[in-house]
Amino acid sequence: MTNNNDKMSREEAGRKGGETTAKNHDKEFYQEIGQKGGEATSESHGKEFYQEIGEKGGEARSNQRDDSDDGKMSREEAGRKGGEKSRR
Image (cartoon, rainbow, N blue to C red; front, side, top):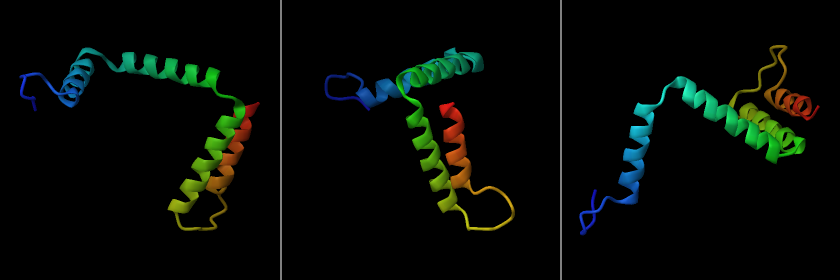
């Protein structure tokens, strides 16, 4: 889609740029930038952040499934424990 000045819209430019980037980079590139992003997030957020998102994820996941007592840890409990472990 273009506007009246024959210029590309921001949406179209972003889409084309994303497509070009995807074609120019391999799996290792995306693994590396994902790792760098994770490290940056880790440096800028405290352990409480990870505990909180672990708990929220566990709660959300447990709400998605029927409560079945099959001897396994609940998703909420797993999220809480995961959050506690990442604090250490």
